[in-house]
Image 1 (cartoon, rainbow, N blue to C red):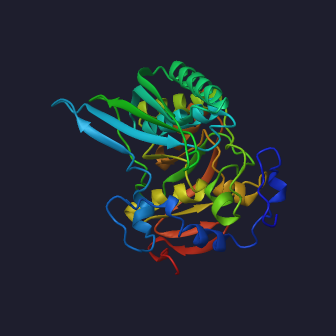
Image 2 (tube, rainbow, N blue to C red):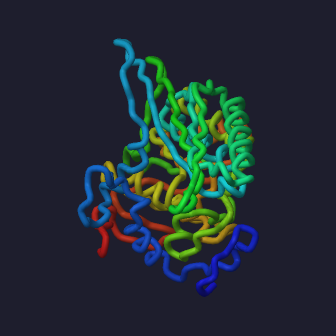
Length: 346
């Protein structure tokens, strides 16, 4: 690769060597600030990334508010995206909104409304209108498919001068509701022995991942694998699993890929995980790829048969990853130590 900048058209996954030592990748990514929940508005100290920060980072984007005395709650979240808005604004917008909806549904929240704001569109750039049009199509498509009310949409046009252009950015705010008779869950694993499943398709993809950008220093790559119809089916399945009370935890595969999603789920209760990777795709893609439409769930062994039957009936793909441990992290029968020892520089 050298110092060349790879464009989206030039990028091929085969150009990225598979890592010889997964543990090196893990501890390299542990210091990536994008994989922690450090709040830079409140804390500018030069500190290491702690497991506690990683463990909480998958929930702090959503705020919950009581709306009546019967247990009904409202939820709000805000998400931003700037990758590839110039190359594929519609797909980038659809990914952002799908990801926001998937995260809410993991908690048992029903998304109901969304607002979208498109910033830093260069008024003097002929492509500015194309970006705005594509983002508008993405917003309209996902709001229709996910049955979301669009409460507001705005575009900010900028007149860039000596400071040069700023990358276009879209920010969406989503609102959801939990009714009193609906099940609420979290991303955290609950108990040793629970079975870990991955709902959704395994794909050989590392596009736009923290692993690719931070570890391999490849800043330009395609958007992560995404199919909105698959996304809809996975989210429908999760809603039904919530309704049947068949899952004890649920977490969308997000930043850092499957490994960091599992780590975020394990840390809160000092638990671990023992998983087996897929022989059909690269191990770095399996562990660190950020393809959309995937959810990690923890299932009580007593509910396993009904869980599996439900997904079979809905024709939704899933993969049995392994089980929750007392604290040890194991991948393909190799031990990576214990969760409470996963500190930077350990």
